[in-house]
Length: 97
Image (cartoon, rainbow, N blue to C red):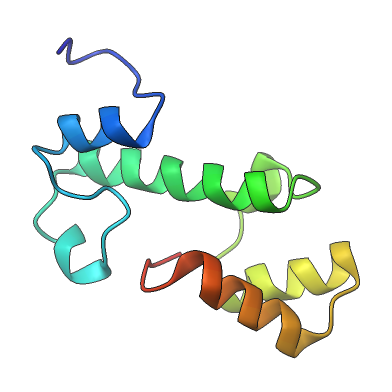
């Protein structure tokens, strides 16, 4: 695979990460190269933006952690804080944001 190709699917990312799940837990992120971590981050942001399309990529990239993301969901979608946190937990599972 061309090293400069941008992955467009989870399967291409898995190929580029030597079969490691790009959506893996923080523990496995430590074994990934910086490029692989960048792809995993991109996939995570795509998952978030697919679920909540009002959250623009420019906003998502400035958020620092799940708490800020949950606050943004409360503000943007008028969710209750507990609901926003639950929705995040379901989507992110054990992935680090």
